[in-house]
Length: 403
Length: 85
Image (cartoon, rainbow over all chains, first blue to last red; front, side, top):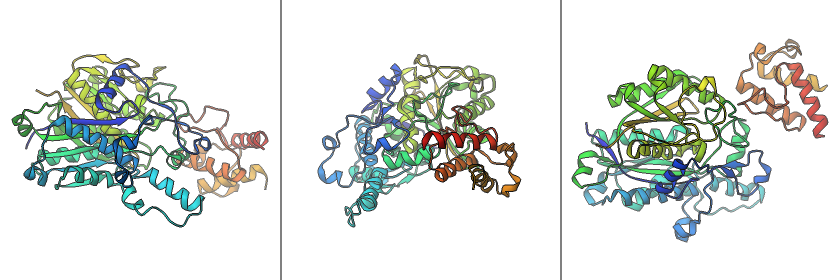
């Protein structure tokens, strides 16, 4: 089995337009959640989100590209450009034949759907733009990444709601580890912040109207975000031979299903996934210093997740740190694990643990060190990233500090 | 049909019971209505009476929409109809 390292990272999300600004915001505990700005927002009861503001698509893409790129694809390509540039990787012919792209996404081109439904249903038009289908399909982003860099290996999109990115990255990790491909671009993206997207979520009655307060006793729901995170997963010997900077090593991953409820989380499912990732990585519970929590800020998730961590880690649960960066960037649904992996990289590489902001009151059912409100400087060797999706589909990744 | 009868009919449908088996002092738990059933019932109530019910599943007992019993729900619906008409 081969070792797998991360040699490039890119992102755009409510906290920043690249990795440096995003990590700076996480260090400072800055909140990217604010008033939503889009058409018909006044008809929503939920009017906040982690929206990417001040973004000019025309500065990043040509007119012809924008005719084919939904917002989720644009975010993906922006993040992928940064990741590929940082890795310094050159996709020569031999590598390009084997390298591929696995990305997480849940809603597909929601903005494209919303705009075109509006035009045919509300405005009564009988024609839509010819590229609606290739723009909205969930695999559009993965396809455009493969086309942009000419990657001919295995490429596809994984859709497991809030765990999509973690499933995608777990799959990419396994592909590099088993030797199927030496380099994979992986991560995920989401852009559901449009009238129809938020309206659908409103119906479920789990969204907060003011802000996201994971683990805090007064939490009152999740807040949606948008954006993308993309990484270069590369076989270790290859990365070392070309002198690439290694951001972190991916040492393990686990995926499980609750097989229980379509929306309620399961403590057993979460615990099995966390312990599965440790086993896959050959780690002991005491090795883990930081967990980037799923931490949605809902009543159900946060207490279930804390109980699962307490079960898996026993006494060590009181010594490790677990924060939810969703308090800052919101819940990016299919893209969330990708942006959250950045917090894990920052923990193991820079020794800085991102906080859970908006934390007001301890909840006895979430009695762990959730790194309230302020980032912490410390040494972390191993970090886990949790994702527990609607539908009971779970994926956890384990990262280790690069040697 | 009275407001009370209509609310009882909505909850009975959700609980897969006859309306005659749903009494004003029953709690949703007694009737076997879970959290998803509650969210669906509230949606049905909003549609039936054209009102907006302030309800967040994360803090079901917060706010002034009392869901402790069927009777409490009926009273809350009557108040919302009066406020929002």
